[in-house]
Image 1 (cartoon, rainbow, N blue to C red):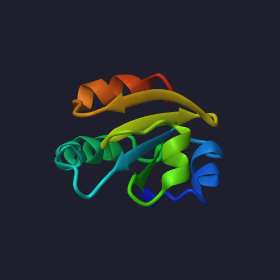
Image 2: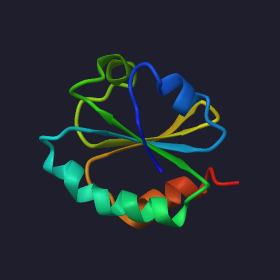
Image 3: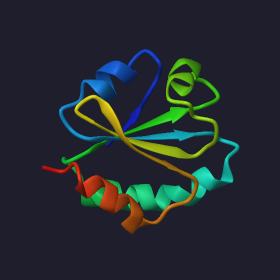
Image 4: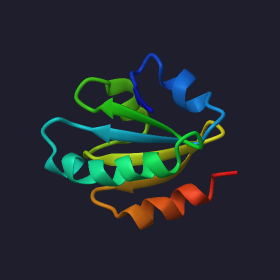
Length: 106
């Protein structure tokens, strides 16, 4: 399930989540954001009901972007128990992301 994240709902949806949360910071103009979409889709299918997935537009939501030092799109952050645990920027593979996620799946 994909959640559209905003500065207003970030705390509730991500930091307050009972599940690990993958947050994709993207931009419509980023070709790399399009390249990673199939990887993220495959992850979501495999880990359905074990993780949450949120997407945030870096051109719109400025407060959260500044708070986490996001400078480029895409950036994928993994939060668990309300804390940032992992940060991946640029292109990555399914197995790269899966290794990170498996640390936080209970």
